[in-house]
Length: 312
Image 1 (cartoon, rainbow, N blue to C red):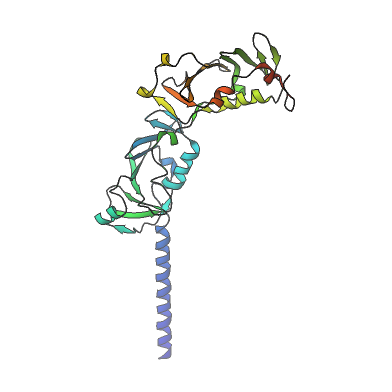
Image 2: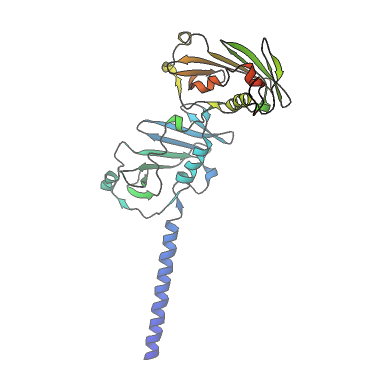
């Protein structure tokens, strides 16, 4: 009799262990499912939309770019975060709520909903998810057409909004020193030209002609500006002032590149800032601060100075 009881106990323990294992395995599977895809290369297009507008991101020559409402390079760091925190983010497949009332309670009928769609290389919709946050530490989401609500341990609805300025790269022009042969600068007080021979730059205006010392800070600031010349805000369409209302440029910069292309940039005083118009993006007026103009409107003695020595 005792032996039979022992066998029953062993069978019970075996069944209990099996049940715990199955439940544990099932639970782990639920927590390992990505919201959009497990393969980032499968996504070739993304649309982000809320009540304020939309932005479309797509692969152009294997690189991510803003494709609508304008064509522009994307902020690569922000794009990486979008994939890490949203596209590839994993969630528990066990919904925290479901039904029409749940959609209302978790904010999916409010104006704060953010909708994200992913597409493959042929433009086919892969998945659409809606994100909302009714005031909690983390967001909630649902898949389009479903009334099941899930939680994501990230902020999405208020962080990944479709504002263009938060997605496009701020750089209007990005040229490194070895991509340029000459830089011509013209402003009301002077005109000068910087020419490169190897890694040595030479300064020339109507009175001065000399090699710029290595490590010269004024030259370094100009080269740094041209490597990341841009703006986070711009005017377009009807918001642009007529060019003839701006008066004469306060600064003109003409760059001859090593590939023989020429870039022309003009700066105009506008309200409490300056407008920059570049020939590679003539449809926009970019707002820049005085510091950008100031870096180019320098005098010859500053180009002659050696680092650690006063200008002569």
